[in-house]
Image (cartoon, rainbow, N blue to C red; front, side, top):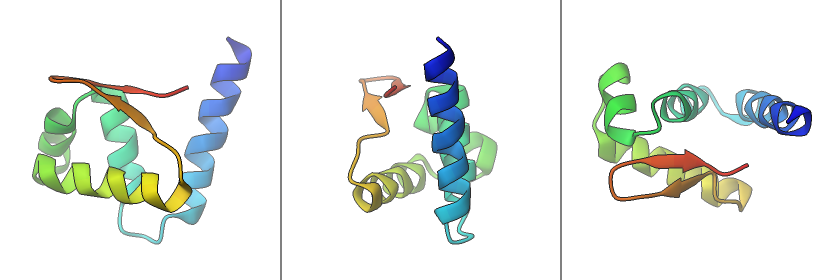
Length: 78
């Protein structure tokens, strides 16, 4: 359990450091909190497609999958 918390903290820190001010880390954190692109989009007043594109862009940039996508929910990959 301790390793997972440290890993998540390190991951979020890296995203905040690397993201170029376009709010990628806020979108990532919102999706993580809500486990839903739609609810994260509602919180940030953007479309769920915009959230999805941003997360896909982060995944492409870092070469890892960040979330396991399901029909009506997402789960962070730990």
